[in-house]
Each structure stands twice: as C-alpha cells, then as structure tokens.
Amino acid sequence: MHGFANPTRFLNIARPLTPWLFWTGMLFLLTGGYCGLFLTPPDYLQGESVRILYIHVPAAWLGMGGWTGLAIAALVQIVWRHPLAGVAGRAIAVPGALFTALCLATGSIWGRPTWGTWWEWDGRMTSMLVLLFLYFGYIALARAGAAEGRGLGDQGGVSRVTAIFALVGAVNLPIINRSVVWWNSLHQGPSITMRGSTIESSILWPLGLTVLGFSLWFGAIVLMRMRAILARNKVEARLARMAREGAAG
Amino acid sequence: MNHWPFIIAAYGLTALGTLGLSFVSWLSMREAERTAHALRKDR
Image (cartoon, rainbow over all chains, first blue to last red; front, top):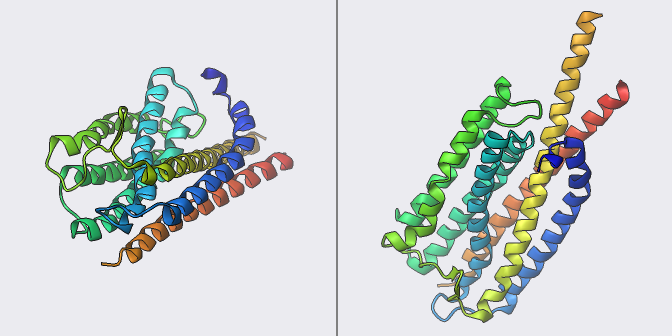
C-alpha cells in the first residue's frame, strides 16, 4: 500500500483513471436511468413511484459506503500513517454528504405518494439524518484543520482528531443497516441481502446499472478532489519555499 | 394520485446534485493543477 504513498505515483494512475471512471459511470447511469424510467413495469402495490428506487438505493449505498471509506482512510492514517489516506478522507466527505442528502430527499419524495407523508421520525430516516450531520461535522473539522494547517502532514490530509471522529462515526452504519429490523418503521425491511432479493426481477435489473454507474462516478469525483487537494498543497509548499528563499537571499 | 411529478422531482434533484458536484470538482481540479503547473514553469 505504501507503494502508492508517493503522490507522483498516485497521480500517474489517477490522471488516466479519472475520465475513464467518469464517462463509464455516466454511460451506466444514463442506460440504467432510461431502463428504470421507461422499460420496467410499475409495481403492483406502489405503482409508478417504484422508479425512484433506481436513484434512492444507489444514493443510500454511496452515503453509507462513503462513510465506510472515510473510516478506512482514518484507520490507515492513524495506524500506518499513509500520507494519502487523509487526502482521500477529505475528498470522500463532500460526495458522501451529497449522496446522503439525496437519499433523504428522494426517500422523502418517494414517501409522499407511498406512505402519505414526507417524513417520519423512525429509526431508518433518523439514523440516516444523523449520518448527514456526521458528514457536516467531518467537513467542518477537516476545513478547520486545513485552515489552521495543524496535523496535516505534508500532503494536505486531516488532523488526528478528524480521523478519530470518522472512526467513531462509523458506529452509526450498523444502526442504519439494522434500524428497520430493530424498530417499527414505515420503511420496508431489508429487500436485498446476501441471500438474494425480494424485489421482482423484472423491476430489479436496472438497479445494478445505476448502482455501478453512481459508484464509478463517485470514484471519479473522489479522484478529482484528491488531485485538486494535492495540487493546491504543492502550490502552497512551493510558495512557502520561495518566500523562505526570498527572505534568506 | 399521479406519481410522475414525484418521479421527475426525484430524478431532477439527483441530476442537479451530481452534475453540479461534477462541475465544481472538475473546475477546482483544473484550476489547482493549472496553478501548480504554472508555478513549476516559473521556477
């Protein structure tokens, strides 16, 4: 893993990978979106509103997957002191927060025609809202650390406190996952598990396309943001060196 | 109840969010890499 700790080596891989991930992701998204909107039948119970599934489920998956990525990056930073781990954490936070917000918004829009309400303070929705607030906390801590320039190493990562916050916040992930089992909820129970799916296959198939498309797109955005952080950090380091040389000369 | 206005709202919001973040992230990366490249040439 430390082989990729060198930003130059990382950038050699990230530069060609970014457009590939982005455009392949877009292709899958557009195909999956079209199929989900126009080719699948309406659900016998929910009717046409079931089509929101194709964006709501990937948004939930990436909101939770994003925080899993943050927690792994934090662990790698704390234990192995990998210089790019903090940069990856900072890059994941904003797209992760976006998908958590989209999950809540699309879920709310889906809930109105299905349940007759925009919002209910039940376990699933409340724990997902907590995840959004956790993302806001992480982003605020990372920005405050970056502004003060404390504990960032030499690559523009996050402070130790921010990394620990990401690890502690991961406690919320199993709560979100099990919330529909532990508490009574308007939200349906787990419909896709390791043992299979309870969703009818004629409705399910475009979901794989949109999940893959959004995941590839997420990867492209994370790489873009990591490249931006590394470039800005390089500029700051170079300006500081020039200032020192100017003062010495 | 007609469900299509809800479907359009959900898809529209998602498209707006993802395309907006794509544009902002790409712009930020391009500006940062251009500045870094220009500074390297000035050395």
